[in-house]
Image 1: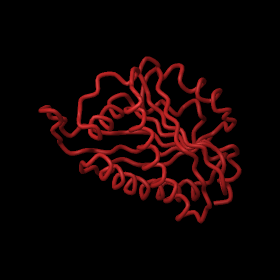
Image 2 (image 1 turned 90 degrees about the horizontal axis):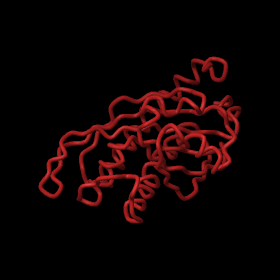
Image 3 (image 1 turned 30 degrees about the vertical axis):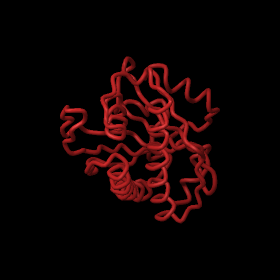
Length: 207
């Protein structure tokens, strides 16, 4: 399916940009959570929106999404998808306390994740804009949390998303050991899928 949408050369270019973006995001995350974070696996691909969650979870897992509306040279949505452990890791490291459940988050926890979206969204979009000579304007981020099985259909309906295919970057980050309230959170990975769900995939054919 990928080959019907973008060429091998275009995918290779996006793959290279994904690796650059991963390093930029890792640097921004490191400053935000005050922990050394390095990027690991990174790669770009084109998938149907229904396949976005496959690298992260099964239908019974909980996922957290940060959604940013994008306009400019390309229009659509930038979506950051985190598994439950990764979302807990981010909030715990920013607030310096343990996080038990992400389904019952208070306003402070939600604010942390939305600011995380601001920070990594800017890093990712700036990388795309600089390397592809695009003009991209992001909106304020919105956070959502749900079981994976029900998540995508709900997300697509609530945000009136029309794009059928997504440009995805599966990136894994590794964080260094850190003490939080006497507990050692050691070397746990923060991983996520970062996807651009365009209103039309045709914009990417001009790369």
